[in-house]
Amino acid sequence: MLNATSPGAAADFMTLLEERTGQRMAANRNWRIETALKPLMRETGHDSLESLAVALRHDRIGKLGDRIVDELLNQESSFFRDSTVFDVVAEVVRAVPDTRRARIWSAGCSTGQEPLSLAMMFAERLDDHMPEIVATDVSETALTRAKAGRFTQFEIQRGLPVRRMMQWFDSIDGDWVAHPGLVRMVSFRRMNLVADPLPIGRFDVILCRNVLLYFPLDLRRQVLGRLAKVLRPDGVLVLGAGETVIGQTDAFKPSQRYRGLYEPNWATAAAA
Ligand SMILES: C[S@@+](CC[C@H](N)C(=O)[O-])C[C@H]1O[C@@H](n2cnc3c(N)ncnc32)[C@H](O)[C@@H]1O
Image 1 (cartoon, rainbow, N blue to C red):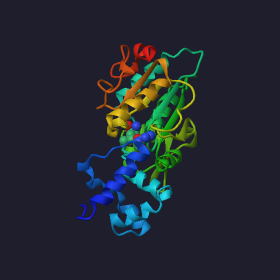
Image 2 (cartoon, protein in one colour):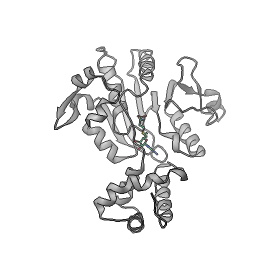
Image 3 (spheres, rainbow, N blue to C red):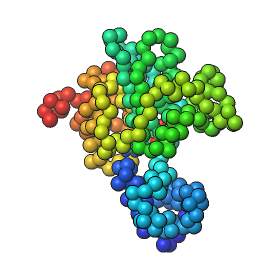
Image 4 (cartoon, helix red, strand yellow):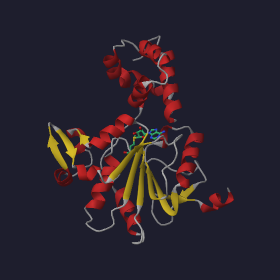
């Protein structure tokens, strides 16, 4: 639990998180702060949140801020999360004409389970239609882990059937490491969805799952507007199981073709 002198420090960390990523932590969840920052406090020799907050004030643009943000971000992910989504994405990609390569963007890819699941699925189809897969996240730490393709026994078991684990990963020192060829099917890049330039070109599918959940509404609307700009007119947006665009933005509407997915709302785009 936070001690009596912690609210100021907690507020500093919550402000930092929101400034850097747009993520707003609900006040009733600030108990998470101490739990999340404990390992970093231990590593940097700070025995209280206040002490860490003071160090942060002297290191506002330095690496300490990045580390704190990384620790506070929710980076929960798993392989083939909400598995039926992957069948629908495969269907969308199948509908792309042979004359061009389909493009998929995993926005907020965390430690890589989502784009690597896509890569496995498409590579196993053994046809010529391997889409380009771009995966981005604001967290450098998450991306470093994603690019290493290294997962603990606990992580690998979440959503990945044994057959795929054996086919695509090697057991090394108690962890499971993806074959380099699998990792190379994904272009991992650091990108803040709120502030950084958008990827170049348009996508057939954008997955932005379980990322916008903790954005305040105006920011969520703004980011959805940005995503719409790089989606093809016939492309689709995939959100997390508990997320919707309804009441959030005019940039998207529920897809007529693919259940549970969203398509750009061209009536709104034309009027804008
Ligand atoms: C809960 S994980 C979801 C991972 C994956 N999409 C899934 O559904 O399994 C949310 C990810 O969004 C990232 N994220 C949060 N704010 C972001 C921002 N402003 N720009 C880019 N990524 C962000 C976090 O670093 C984290 O890795």
